[in-house]
Length: 206
Image (cartoon, rainbow, N blue to C red; front, side, top):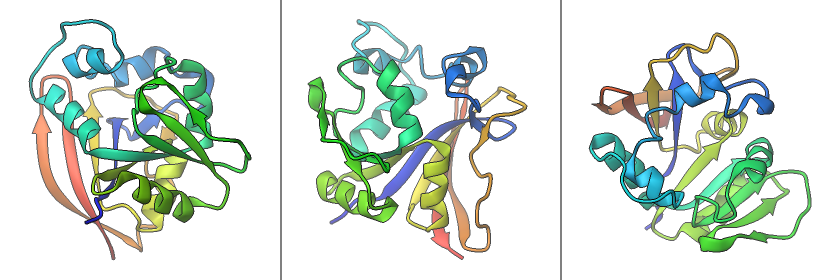
């Protein structure tokens, strides 16, 4: 049985998931947005930063998100930023399908991550990711434009927002340009911690 298609992102209280400029990634605001995840035991394990780290519900959610993912899909903007910042042992450890116009051979990294470059659209990338994921889920990893394309095509089954107590003021909005005439949501559950609130929604066609 095929798994779900989902995304999971951190978002500021005013609706932004990233700065406008790729050069501002890892800047002060982005670091504040992601502050909830850095102390977690799972984060340290996955990036091989050594032992220790916090446990609790935030850590459980991060681990569950990783374990449910059998393959990922991302856009070229996210890949370009990550190619510069990810360690050699990229943190996915599954196949990743990059939606792009660039023709490029698969790029295999240590630790089980292989990037495949898909030139014929989001549906083709998703079909290939489903095939690679087996009975596990497919994660639309980002960035915001790619997530929105899948949402507007009603190809996402559910998503989780980690709502951080941060204000951006400008940047990339998660739902800028959403086709609200096609997309309807149902709240599934809420998990909260002192650092962040996790909001999970099911998606259906309106």
